[in-house]
Every structure is written in structure tokens, then in C-alpha cells.
Length: 501
Image (cartoon, rainbow, N blue to C red; front, side, top):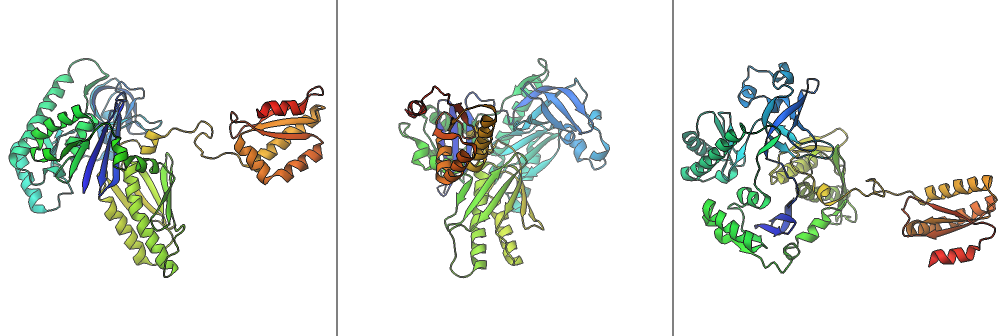
């Protein structure tokens, strides 16, 4: 059973896709955010870099967008076998100061600007229009050749010359009138863009893609969806109007949810979101996976944990890896992890078991609408795969870097802190006559020192003949130490009592 749950908020809209009650995809859009994926701009080429075969283009954002040579060359030239991309130079394709029409294909990520293309695509409900090409393609998810050929013939009748079309999965079983409506609408949109591109100077936006809720109706709400639930009455009415036009047979599947209740909590989505931010993910068997995300790649480690199996070690390992495979595919999709992904399964000696796990991974990843490629297992026993980067990772949307540990996720050990205290005591001993020192640390560090290293602390006191007092202070960072030396005329007990209040 597939469901779409929409939480329409004052500042943010959230869309959850559930399969058999399990959250598999999550989309969020803040009202004030500058979501630009799919937007079309009139941009100005700022810098051409032959060494990188790319150009930077100003489209009016904080960071210039990045245009690769293969995205800059017209599609028909790119598909011409006579043209070799290696023989072309970016400086022959675009010039500095040139105004060009581009579309965002990848949101800005981290320190990188948006990635753009000159190959404009306009998605509809059943098909995608590709101006300036003469290509007809069919979604690979439509597997029956007879249906693929039928759809190709219908589109060839409808589309104008020099306009390409890709038939989406939603086009399966549709008649010529359904496809005609889509093409007519998208051609009207393309003509509007053609008029807009001649008006005004670059940089400027020419076409803004649909908002999250309307895009959900267009892309996700299909016959495979058993119901769509939304908690906003006004937007519910808007959805009913749209569905009544594009897919009237689905109108009965749209439901309004009383907005006095938390819709995500009711459907168990909120708790799953919190778990999806955890580094460790437990498996039902007692095993677990560890997910570490970096800018360069994501590593996933599989462990047996509490699972001891019932027969032998080899059987335990294979069962854990199989269970982990399903969870990994689900987590990659839910967290929207893109780029290079390395999976360290528990070592398997049997080649049949290795092939079983890899084939299962490929099967589970087919549920993902984003393109994924499993490259196989390396000589080190690591599975390499890639997933296309389209949107920001879930963790980057919901989490901020800790200002204390600066993203390391770690603090100084008690041993390190004691060494730091000893160095300060040595400095004080060599340069002052102080006999008493108070060190303020975080309560956590105070507890660590007194539980693990009290004997070492006494040894430092004896060696340097200075009384040392450790006091916890909630205002002190984990990695910091505050130092107060006590003068001859000061009462140590009064000071400590004051600090402990």
C-alpha cells in the first residue's frame, strides 16, 4: 500500500511517501527558501575555463552556476557520432559575456554553486518535452516492448519537428488524448519561455518550476498511490481541482486530515525522521549499520551487533548482510544520499553469497526513482556504488554543524584535558608563587576526571606542590578550561562556595 502524506505548514511544506506504512522518501520546502531546481534562467557567462572544460555563469544567485561542456553543446551536436567531445573546447561553445538560456539540474551543495544545462526539459504528467532535439524515449520502467512501441507511435504523431519527448512511467496505458493534452500544455509553456528570453537583461529568471505540493501531484500521485492525505483545507480543495482535470479517476483517493492533529505524528512519520538522522541504525535481528556522511563520499559499515544466529557463523553473516542490504537501500533513498557510496558488508568467503547480496542490493535500489549504479565489490571487499546527486541530503536540511566540535562529533579525552591541566600547573609553578588553582571545566569533563583519573590528579598536586580544584560549569565548552589562581589574601573555601551556588 502506497500513501502520500502532506504536512502543509505556515513556514514549510513536507511530503512523506510511504510504502506499506514505511517512510521511504521525504521532501521539504520552506516558504522563504530559494529552491531553484528545474528553474530556467537567462544567464551571462562570467568565466570560461578551457582547462576544466567548463564555464561559470551568473544566473543571479550568490554563487555563479557551473556549466560543463557536455551541458553546453546543443543536444543534436552531442548525439552526432561525427562529433567527438574530446576534440571540442568549451571556449568554442560559449564566450565570456555571452547571454544564454540555462536550466538548473542540481541545487547548490556546500561550497559548490548550482549545476546548469542548456538542454532544457519541461516535465508534464505523462511526458517530458525536450526542445531543440528530435528524440523520442520511453521510461525504462515500462518494460513491455509492445507498450513502448505503442507509446512511441502515438508521440510521433503528436509532436512537432525538432521537439524531443521522453515518455514517463505515468504514460503507461494512456491514450492519444492524454498525451495530446500534455504536449499542448508544454508547448504553450515553451513558447512563453521563448518570448521571455528576448526580454530584459541577464541575469534573470524566466521560468520557475512548480512548488512542492503541485509537483507532488504531477510526479508522485499516480495509480500506484492508494491515497493522498493533506492537513490544509484550502490546499486540499486546490488539489481536488487539479486532480479533477489531470486524473479525475484519482479524485476519490484524496483525503483531508483534521489540522488540529499532527499529521506526521499520527502516521508515524515524525519518529522515523528523527531516527533517519542517527548515525547508527539498528536491524530487527540485533545487527546494525553505521552511516558516515562526508562531502567526498558516504561510508556504510555493517555489523552483527547483538545477533548471534542459530546455526553457524557463516549463516549469521549472510543473514545480517541480507537484512542490512534492504535497510541500506531504504536509508539511502530516505536520507537522499548522493555521490559515491562505499558499503563495508561483513566479510563473506562464498562467492555465491557475495553475488546474492549484490543482486539483492540492485533489486532493492530499483525502487529508487533517482538513478543508482552498483559498481561491484573491490579487492578490499567493499561494495562501490553511486547515486545521482539531485537534492540536498536530509541531514544537511535538518541538521547544523555543531559550533563546539565543528563537525567532528568528538571532544577532547579526559587524558588530554589532564595533560592540559598539568601544563598549566607547570607554567604557574615556574612563574608565580601561587599555591592554589581552580580549574573550571564542563560538568561532563569534571565527572570524567573524578571517575577515571583522580589518582593522576593527586600525583600532579604532589609533584608541583599546588592544590588543584576542579569545578564543573555549564557555561564552559567541553574542550575549554577556565583557570583562576588564588592569591594570598583570598579565601579558597569562600570562592568555591560562591562558584558552586
